[in-house]
Figure 1: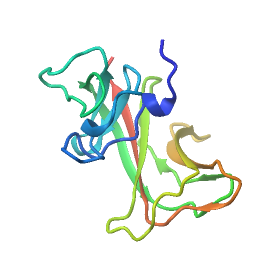
Figure 2 (figure 1 turned 30 degrees about the vertical axis):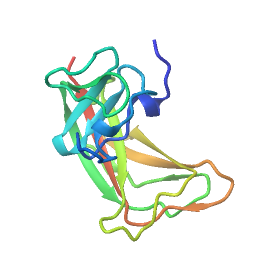
Figure 3 (figure 1 turned 120 degrees about the horizontal axis):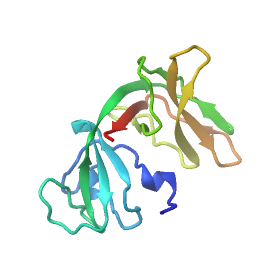
Figure 4 (figure 1 turned 180 degrees about the horizontal axis):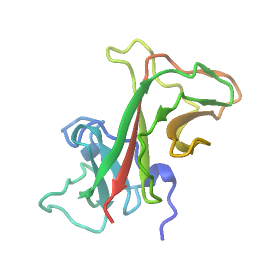
Length: 179
């Protein structure tokens, strides 16, 4: 069993699947440090991919990484929920929460996976996400029966206050693999 960090096992969703020179595509993720079985969600095609490091390309229907071993194999499953919010928690001293999106009334299962990602404003102008901020997705089951919310925690790992720029869009995806 591999004990890699969650950030290496479940990657931040990628905007596109492939593209030469596109640093945001799944194809351009260097798989060297990723564990076998790492999972990534591709936004533009609404599909998850699992890394199989022991497989050797080329294999029809898979994606060969631009660098690193293995192949990305499409994962059978579906996106149960996709939502977004445009917000900023403002100044973060140690911990801040982004307003949460309400999930539709679907029962969640233990195998469901929450992906979350952020995108800077179109046209820029808001600045880069500051160093020292860890963004952690979470699922909250509230006191109201059947109500589930997803959200982001912004953890400041520095000693000084950090201000998050306005205008970022935060995406939430709950993905259900096929069993």
